[in-house]
Length: 444
Image (cartoon, rainbow, N blue to C red):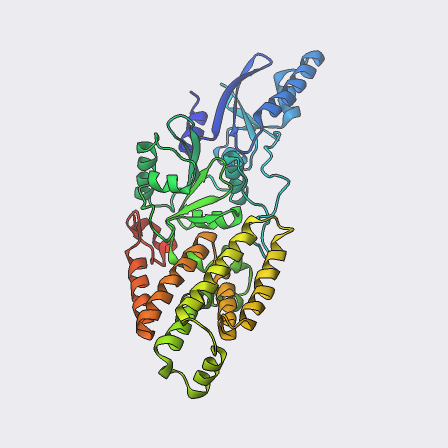
């Protein structure tokens, strides 16, 4: 093989979406080089065949034809790699040390550039992943023009093979971490892969962990910064989102889109998210603790106001808050599952009519309705659906501990949650790690 071709293959040695195909143009052997995730090769060949047919009828030479297709260049490795990364088709003329950069028929990398359905974007790209894995890789390559991005494919499943792609940034990622993930994927190729629980088992994670081991996003613009920070991105065919590992606690509060704002505003936004998780975890528990166990902590005026609001309530504060939290969970789940035309109606019925009715019927206190609304709103400030659900689950633990031990139970719950978070590891990397992007090569 020509030395130029060997250098290109070595440069992209871990990219399974790179193709090198030998063809004949006017009886001259050439090599087509490019990424099949960026180029529609079938349509490009059809266009080339039309040019070749015209050249034959016009009795043009190979040199004249190639000059029509693009600019003929001497072998320049830097320019060739840059062109391939931009989605161009390289036509290398064998034994002549020349190549042509051709503008191919590009692969459609979006479904009419749809907006993300689960993540809202402010002042950022609105394209989102879809169900085709090659399209998703192409979207990532559009976002980051670098030859250091590596994409490796795997097939997982006993009969129905599911295509899975492993992406990482060569030079930033920890090689040991990549090898661990590749080893697990190769070792568990016979397992079913139909959902994230199956993928969790394939990677050797516990399926009973409340905190997810993946950071899930449907935005290419959020995925690329994780690659630059040394994370690994997993793309699964038919899954319209990217899975980033390892996942850390700080990912619950940060978005790359935040950097489109000035630093004071970015810091304020992230502080609001931290306050949101604190309100979600502690406000319902604090209500139960101060009403049922430790009312002496309150000022007299506040204690009298709360007592007045709970006058004629027939059951304890724990039953009262658990009942309303469950009703709120039902409203949220119904809003998610119902069509968008009906969802707002359910929200209005559940939030306004039902809330007012239960207060007037003396089933719950007015203060609890305020706490419930604040908790639900605060929970929605967190980044990521998986994190949103995990915190919703953990607040019940805090409420139960507060009903038994009061304020001391809240403190105990904080210690338990902190200890649990500290115990979570992903391939030997702590969930509480903060500076992975700066020291990524030192861990794993």
